[in-house]
Image (tube, rainbow, N blue to C red; front, side):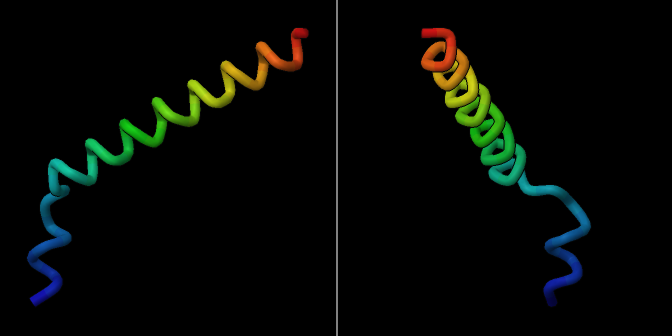
Length: 37
């Protein structure tokens, strides 16, 4: 049952991972700007 779903990486998983990386990078960038001031 569940084993077949883990054989291939779903496209939404890749999209979520990319979204998390983008959000984290934007938060880090804002944090650096606040620390710079």
